[in-house]
Image (cartoon, rainbow, N blue to C red; front, side):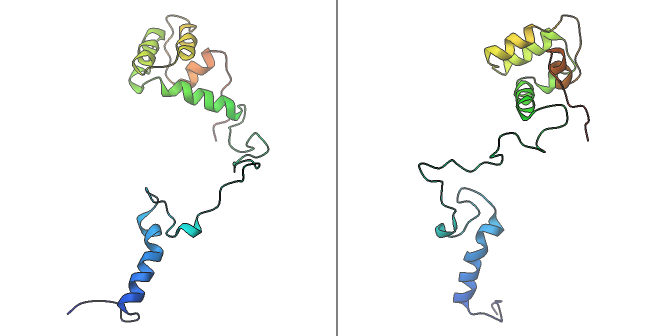
Length: 138
């Protein structure tokens, strides 16, 4: 005996499963929208694209004491310092950055660090380069 829906016929069951397949499967190559007509239209040629911060700076996107640009630059620095390099001194950080193919400006910044100091976190490295960290974590 084949199990099926007792409320709908096979054709309606198939149609209903197609309607929710994007929600069940999640966003992937096809996205979370099932039908193309449900996709939002892109901005026109003479109109700006959609953004989460149309006025510029995000009000809640950056911690106190830092701008969103500072957060992005610190994050960029952290991408080139491997976890195995921390805690580490200037030479360890430079080795990790070179191994991760860091751009020249990141290497130059790390070369400015004082020798003989061990850094435990990327935030400590950021502060040693003369930048500000957040004043309150949570």
